[in-house]
Length: 139
Image 1 (cartoon, rainbow, N blue to C red):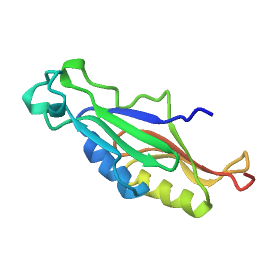
Image 2 (tube, one colour; image 1 turned 180 degrees about the vertical axis):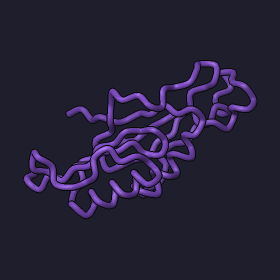
Image 3 (cartoon, one colour; image 1 turned 60 degrees about the vertical axis):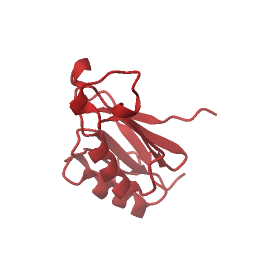
Image 4 (cartoon, rainbow, N blue to C red; image 1 turned 90 degrees about the vertical axis):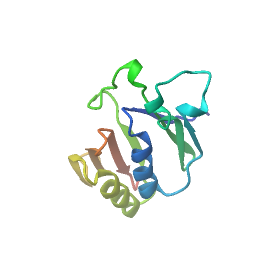
């Protein structure tokens, strides 16, 4: 079966965001590639340390990201067409992930019992990324 992984574009703060995500999810980065590591693609000197590609394994999936080079324009940090959905293994894990990832962000729906029967919450983190956390005891 196919696996869905999430990839996020950042405007120069991918590394900071991923250190924050690692502090919540745990684990180690799977890969970190900087623009300077790709000499065949010329980038401005002040972007040499920016992230070309970074990964953080989360369970059986991977959260990946990059910084968008200034020459390509800025990415919309307030887009609202997609959210990263997390299926928690327990109510306690849902609370930990929700409160950890939403720290400094904006809660759209506090975590709690939902009308559809699961334990659910929704927010935009301090980097503008939208998340949904869900625990469904029914399996």
